[in-house]
Length: 254
Image 1 (tube, rainbow, N blue to C red):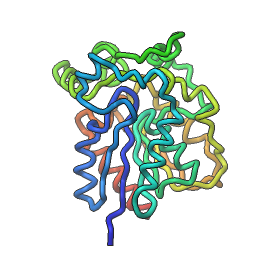
Image 2: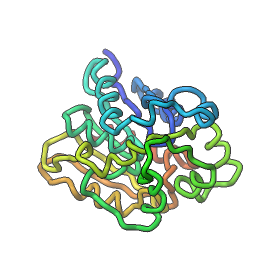
Image 3: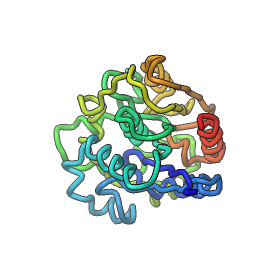
Image 4: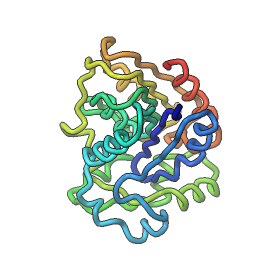
């Protein structure tokens, strides 16, 4: 019997390599784990920051969703989907299409119509609204403030050097348009939201709004909030607890 697949979907400014430890942990738990890159995100992070892929200027959220829909269709059975940040919204949109057996979203970006007016959220996302399509090349200071403001400087720098890449502004604008619209009453697979107490870019309050937007008839929708966690809750110290609680929930929904 083949193992059930789990597809990890990274968020903006990261690559599939950011899921390496999660892949190993889920593989040990009996899953066939993969963490593909978004289009324009492959290669070494430092090289990408020095020379962004020109394709990022036209990459849209819908392109990323289609990319992972195609990956999900390649193997046997419906995969488990785990996404972070904008990758969480990708998972929500895939589930809305009827793709995926279960979904776990960490600090998920909000679908169209779900809003936050928290200053940290607005300021961290301001760059996507600039009137240009040129890729965003994030600075270390911005990434620290938005993703992992509690981290030790050396650890934050190491994570930035290894994982952080340029990003498409058009993908970042995705939650503002129709390509991120979700029918919150449409039945779908079970979905778990995971929020970080100290998340600045996707505050815990926004995770609550996102989860509560779903109607009861959509299916199982649950949310857990983890104290002391930032937006980098999949990579900061203690990520093992986040992964294990996700695994426990996935098993409970089988």
